[in-house]
Image 1: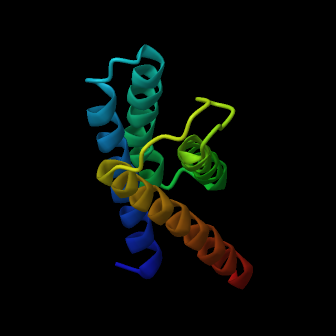
Image 2: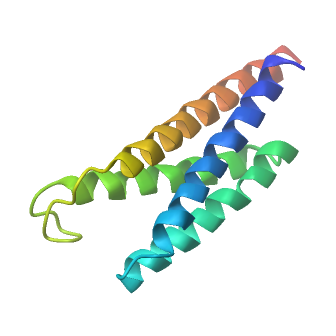
Length: 124
């Protein structure tokens, strides 16, 4: 198995784990908007395993990268006091940090895939 394949499988694993955490955190939520965001976003992240394993291409990787960056940005913004989304700073929980670690790992892996993929294309 080459290094690029390992990156694809690692990216699939990190987005799946982040998605599972989002679904698990979203289902028991009392806030319906938060529940929808977490469950739908989590299901999309779990789905994103398919484009990563099947190597659907740069457009799919870019969309996954963008969506994950939006999720990270929402988390960061909602931790800031008096933010424009919730109006107050949210707490920083262990589950939140764990989710962000997997999402940041996914972002790093996608960037590595895009860079390594472009180098392989240049060599051909």
